[in-house]
Image (cartoon, rainbow, N blue to C red; front, side, top):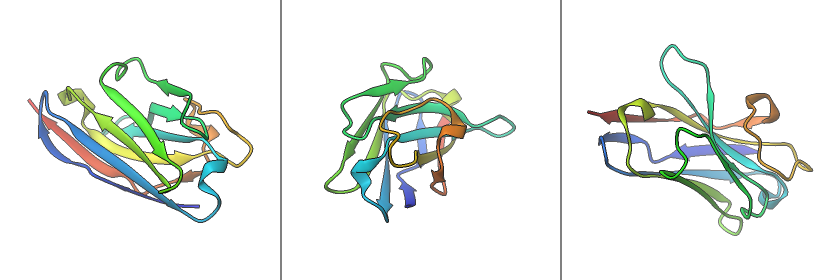
Length: 125
């Protein structure tokens, strides 16, 4: 599967951005999806994930209540709505998929097999 992330940019603290990840290749509805981020000098960290249908979601504590992950299997996209952004949300954001058969999202980087190229989000104070 190929993943293409978009929607990043520069926003002031308190603002909002919506990231989108478009998938091509194998059947989109057959695998769980996740969003991760990596700030300069830091390890890649989990942000949010959902299962194959989008009915089950996971969030990192740091974004819970501010970010919302959603997916549209017909359009083959998974979005990340980010509200109340903070300077500490500044990072490159990556979407990723698990292998078919792994229906549930996971917070572990190593559970994901395909990654998009990343989209940069900068939140100014």
